[in-house]
Length: 114
Length: 108
Image 1 (cartoon, rainbow over the protein chains, first blue to last red):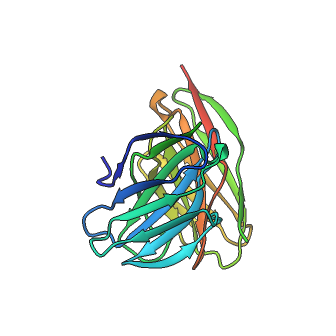
Image 2: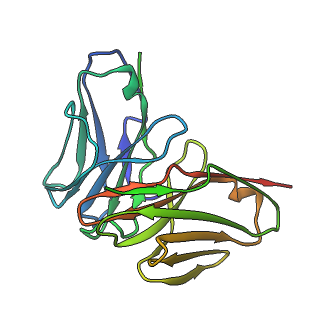
Image 3: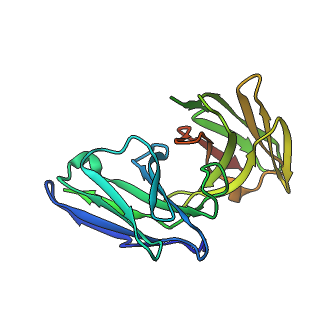
């Protein structure tokens, strides 16, 4: 158990819908990262927040947005969902602001878009 | 931009040694990290190299050569539980990139 929690574990929805994925970092960690992993694919970095502020951005679609709240939990919002958005979405956290330190991953949310 | 390349599959027998290579092209490179992921599970951190040379952690070692834009993960005394995907990753000030992963299969 990494100490990072993600909810829900599974999510099934239809195309065109909007969903919100939630992540709570390890106690004391200020950085939260979001990743997308499609079937048999690597980890695609989406976005990083540090202490409430956006710090780094990957190839995140405009239909996707995220935020980190004062209690440091984070939410990833996915809208106008398409079939291709079906994937595992991981959240990770770390103590440091920089991206290359050890990151602790949550168990992931498996999103299925029908 | 950044890109990392690693072999898609590696197979070895229990007790053997295996090396998983990673070559990278990045701007503003800070270091190379390695993660292990079992099927459907969360990636777990294995090691990080900020400087050239070898880092050893138990049965796992990781190496980095900045001049060659190359690194590797070395797994010794392979066990069945080492069967998993292994990802190399690099970060810069504003970006994180991972390779596509190497599926390691350990045979009895």
